[in-house]
Length: 155
Image 1 (tube, rainbow, N blue to C red):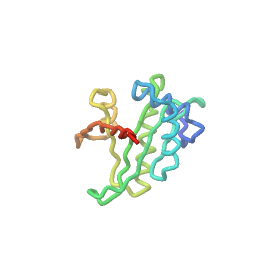
Image 2: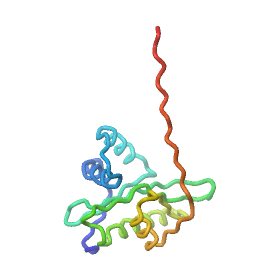
Image 3: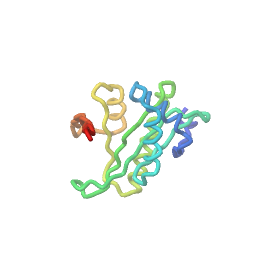
Image 4: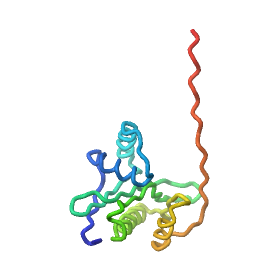
């Protein structure tokens, strides 16, 4: 099946398909208007690129690659921000093809490496990344940012 996988760059016209993929990745639904605004803005960012995987014309996967110059590496790094394959297409080489695309893009840009983060509970994903040659070398810590309420206008 991997031979029938077609890869192409995502466009704003792919918003519906990409939204479904992101909801699958996070097992959640998101504010669609905010998603559309963010997706469009990301597509305009020259350092961020989304590549879709299609089988028989149907979008079944996506990878998001962000190229950034890291001062502590003194080099470019390709950060894979999203990688998702729909359940029916898993085990058929789609994820491997998407990763290979991202690695090729990073290599062509002169990057030192590609990196990614994955949730601690995604054990199948961990095994997949290890099979693809990725190693756990860091811990990522997160902290929600509390939003500040606007002061009330007492005037």
